[in-house]
Structures are given as C-alpha cells and as structure tokens.
Length: 72
Image (cartoon, rainbow, N blue to C red; front, side):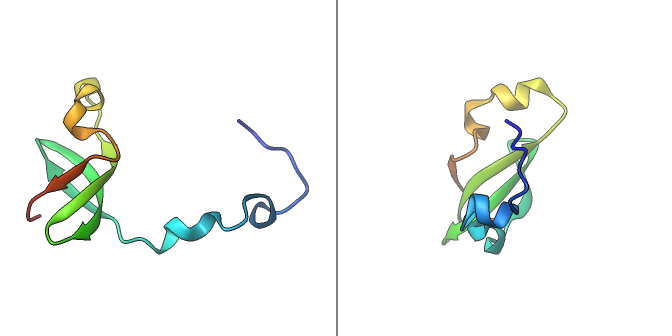
C-alpha cells in the first residue's frame, strides 16, 4: 500500500517509532542468518530472515515471531 499525502509520516502513523528503540542482533540459527530481538535469559524472538534460499522462508522454525533459545 502506498500513501500519498502532504501530512508528515509522524502525524499519520503516530507513535509508530516504538520499535526503533529495540536492540536487534544478527545471528546464525539452523544454518541461516536471522535477526532476533533479545527477550530474557537466552531467549530471543525472530524478527527477520536474511537468506537467498527459498527453503529458509518455508522453514517453520524460522518464522518471524518464533521464540528461540540459545547462546549466540
């Protein structure tokens, strides 16, 4: 969706910048590069998959929003 407007994005989207303050880490998980957000005590939430392989995007273990554990 494209929004054509003369109104600044800050006004249209309001408090949408809350995610800018999060700390993201790029790690290797299950043989693929993923971007995760630390939660607590070796728990991370997958935010993004970085891969050129279509199999990585079809892998249910790498779905954004999944909680993974480990030390990276």
